[in-house]
Amino acid sequence: MGIFDYFRQPRQKSASVAKERLQIIVARERAARGGPDYLPAMQQELLQVIRKYVKVNDDAVQMNVDREGDCEVLELNITLPDDRG
Amino acid sequence: MARIVVITSGKGGVGKTTTSAAIATGLALRGHKTAVIDFDVGLRNLDLIMGCERRVVYDFVNVINGDANLKQALIRDKRADNLYILPASQTRDKDALTQDGVERVLNELSEDFEYIICDSPAGIERGALMAAYFADEAIVVTNPEVSSVRDSDRILGILASKTRQVEQGGEPIQGRLLLTRYAAERAARGEMLSIEDVGEILAIDLLGVIPESQAVLNASNAGLPVVLDEESDAGQAYQDAVDRFLGEERPLRFVDVPKKGFFGRLFGS
Image (cartoon, rainbow over all chains, first blue to last red):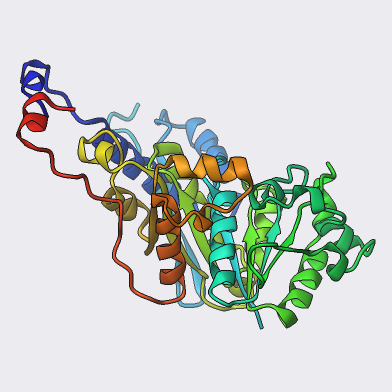
């Protein structure tokens, strides 16, 4: 950092922007990994079925596959909007 | 039984082949009988980096197909006694690398060699999957740059699930990080992901850090693995990485910024 740098606009360092972006995308991709290959397609179809009845956002259906001992547990979480109608 | 090591990265152009050549040469120079295999079918390049491109007669796919035996295809390195190179085929048939064929070649090599270094192609297609499948451990080559780090994480996901060891009910293979093209000054200025940043995101052990260096291009121009350039920073950093690979402790070098004097601090760089 030289003396002239003090007159420049302070801004976030690009490396910390890179790190934040990476942490988010890597976490998301890791969550999607490991599950069966049909999971994303099934998630989309479920979303379409739900939309026949309720207006929901794209991220209304959350799916997760967990392993508990010898069992695989498919966790399905559907968030409905507050104002039904 | 040989130890099979895959050099992988996901993204292209980050230094897989440079690293394969350096690690294989380093192991051979330390007395370990080592074979290095180019898995990049269609885009052979390890031969150029190793400086043996004019001595290629038969290749990996020839051996798999039975057109040649391993003895005929292996190229003996002229600098390191214990080093042999198995070049990739230039066929465009991506299915040429059959799982059975690759396994047969690796089994045969295993009888004779201590280490088998598999130079993976970029991407997550067949060649990359085959290079990783039989591995006992992995070296993940990563640049301190967003797309490289993300691709390395994907490759780590593949290593965790798609290897023979896992499919046979064993533990996932260990992958260690080799951070290449690292510029300590840029990292110190906050312009480049630091060693700690990349380590934190990928959450794997660090095998080494290779500084951004002119020596790497000079070495590939000459067809001389950079590890042989003992004067160079990159060459020494690869030597350290090979020592760490073999279980020795080596402090990281070329990762600190030299302190500036008074005028340097006043006027910046």
